[in-house]
Length: 302
Image (tube, rainbow, N blue to C red; front, top):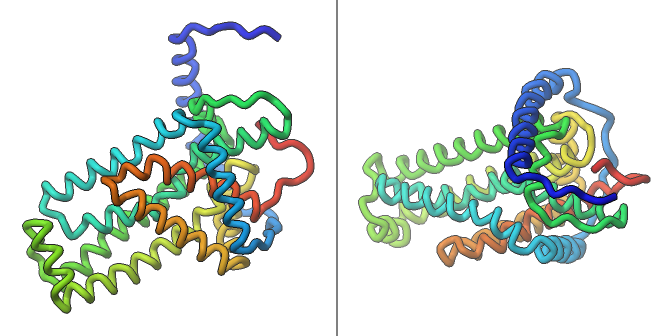
């Protein structure tokens, strides 16, 4: 069937209309969630650490397929991180710099939603043997999803967890170093590396941060892809994610370590490495989800 070349203004108006309808459905879905919170338990597949190599390879293949589209999209993420870091310096909130950066592990599952949708659409194209559509804007069709409201609610939960982490980290700093913030980053680094209070700060901060990141992993690693893939309630999505982690503790712990190391390496060169690291990890998360919850018979919805 021949395709008609659409007027750009008409296309933009359609996208805005879709977004408006998506916001409206989000409100409806929030009401729907109260009556559709839980469904029947889903079967969890057991995986091994060796499967993570295939998961990462799948993430890299998706990045290679979308190329600059994905890089352009994810460029927003490190830019926002740079703005936040600059604000921390200017506001003399240097002690919050590390919590702000490390907290990206908490927000990661939510940040990657659009990339999960890209991988989902690529998977469907392969099943239907259709030509792949590499326009990332099409992935914004998640606003039309019946589960869009649940996705937003779950994202807000992770935002709240992120804010709680920042407050907790700052509380630990104040308890160990007093209410006076560090005036310069050099002074702060000397305090942390050369004083007993600084050593306690590193130990407590990393320990508590690990607990926050582990909680975010348990809540979000399967929930977001599941809400995109199937018509399930928010409660079922969260509970399935927790069950998936509990059923595969070693592989999921290894995956968490991969995420932490990847984000750390990506953040070292002024966050520029996140332009590559983030899309690979996000696409790989979709393939991890597919390992944990294999696709059922038939072709999934588009």
